[in-house]
Length: 110
View 1: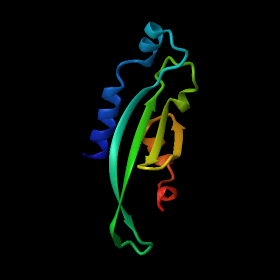
View 2: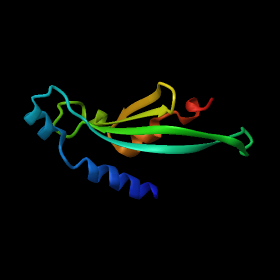
View 3: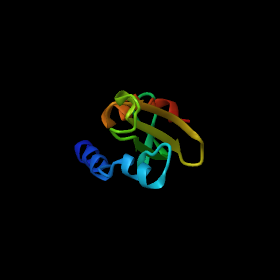
């Protein structure tokens, strides 16, 4: 799946405005979550792949919606968790692309 297709998928899946769920559920805060399961090949510093060093991650994109009352620059949040470990990184931004770009992926390596 291309980057453009992924962003379109996330935006389409979050069309159900969190404010609607918040209203009907009497919740104080609601975010829409889109989850991805990913496999990443670990590379050595010189760019060669390391055999049998695939790493599995969960990448969750949270969308607080336009009516959340939060700063619009913090609408999207990306949380990345290495399978079998606690979440190691997340960042908030005004767009899905920026939230993903803000993740310090290198810190997720062993």
